[in-house]
Length: 209
Image (cartoon, rainbow, N blue to C red):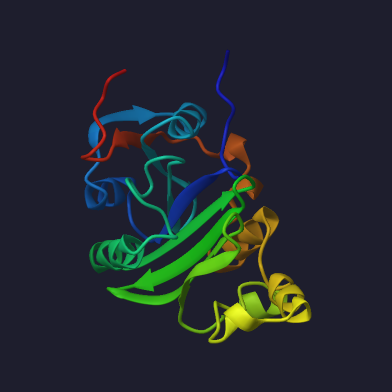
């Protein structure tokens, strides 16, 4: 069965401004590297590992459903430090994630070691475990990511919960945010991606294939 080109939903990815795939792969410490075409690399990164490519001018994308990051996700305490550290090496680094089930949606932007904005919604638990910085103009215009777990949320009325939920995102909102901040991967014309990218495994993932 042939590979399906591209990626978008049910995964996580980084968008890195004006860096080469090699620089991004080095920052992620990817091992067992292979040069793969766009279709094969993105398909494989849905299963394991990370695929790094430059499908659009000015942005290098690193995609990995299970291993970006490895061992935790944007709902957990290590995430902000991980993104800050990457941005110390790479400059501007953006993170996006969307999973319809279990309703996990996130976006974050760091630059030169500073986490400028971070938002994550965990629909399974009905909470916002990550809320760093103030909502950007893009979030305000889309009407999503505007509220975290504010003081006194335990005593919210049904109406207050309804108003709060109206600001929580769907997977399509994640794609819209990616398009505004950098690039929406679902909108990439796969036929234009003619150069191969770098596929590899993070240090904690062994190559058992």
